[in-house]
Amino acid sequence: MKDNFSVSPAGVKTILIGLILMVSGYILMLGGGSNDPAVFNDAMFDFRRMVASPVLVVLGIIIVIVAIMSRPSDKGDKQ
Image 1 (tube, rainbow, N blue to C red):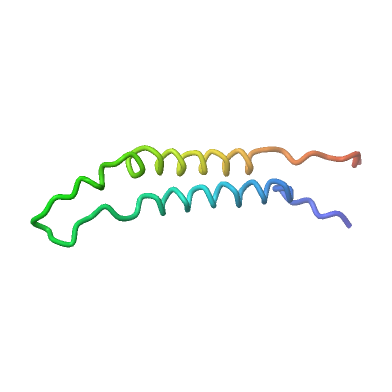
Image 2: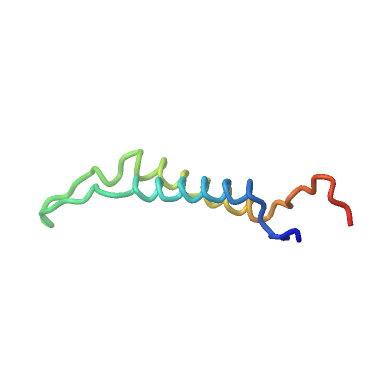
């Protein structure tokens, strides 16, 4: 009996890669605050938090969507 899952094993690996990219993007967004509310810290507006991390999160979302939407290939199984 062959299981017909909607996502292939390669698709599951691709989904995990996308999730890892998203988590790493969220981790890159951490920090940049100040312990003293009267002191402003410009570290929250650096390249890592404003550009790199959102790009990683969006790229991870795109990879997960593509992995879910891609059709698993049939390797000679015609019924």
